[in-house]
Length: 378
Ligand code: FE2
Image (cartoon, rainbow, N blue to C red; front, side, top):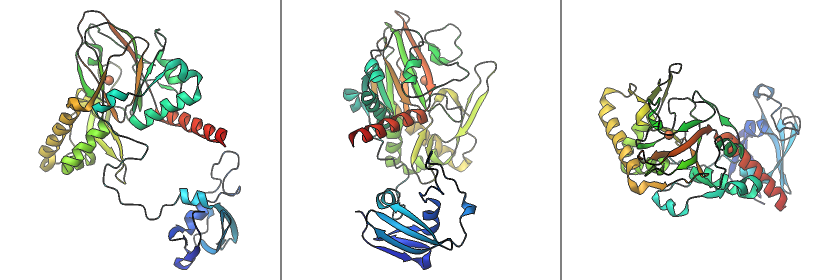
């Protein structure tokens, strides 16, 4: 049992479980009884205004694996599993440095090239455990390959269906990536492309991208991926002020390359949550708009940091390279992992299809698989 002693503290405003404190209002708001939480869908049935402003703890006692709390003035008794309290404890959290990452994320560089996470398409489709392992890799590394898929136009939609839904945009449900005359976007030419995240001019950005190969006999045209979270960590560790500048001022991004579309966004290149967690990177030289939100006195240092960040991203030691074969695809977390393409010649052909999807669906599918596996193991 995680706790052995309970004390009411702060004049009944809180309790302490072996030194881990919980406020009365927090406990009451998170009560697990069926009058507070629907036993059907788990949703909260009360609002904060249903909780008395002078809520306090009249009595608290541990009995077995439960903590029973009597709230005043309601005299309502609520029982909490101690394991639940331990899992949701908020007291004594460490102060983390800006750019901290969740334990579920592992940053990487070119070393990952020898251990690229990959699954077979048919196996992932038929076997939930294999699918779960593949989705967990996407969550952990922000990138994974899928091999052995059908060599048919539109097959990338089947990849999205493994875990969620396509996000349709002005480019359609999917877009073609091959040499075109009069391209509407530089992605559709044979030029090499610097590592970038897609569509930073949208808010919210598509949080996943799938690129699916149908033909790839052209010279060159390898795909590359770079972990921008790793690049941000490197910037922070060598130039903390540069990291501050790129994470505290907004850049701007725009796209108006099609007649009926004018997209724009205003967001930092390195995005942190209010508590400093690194949650996203937007990096795309093609769609960067004039930066107007950095004060004059900081602009030179901002540009120096931007240049340094780009140099880190362009460093070959950061990139994982691979050439997709027809029927192979890869998925990236478009808020984290940059993708690039080496230039390719007109000899042979290169035909990829790309589409967007979102992480909420992928994480939901992963959570359901993990929950079901846990239940099955019990
Ligand atoms: Fe792209």
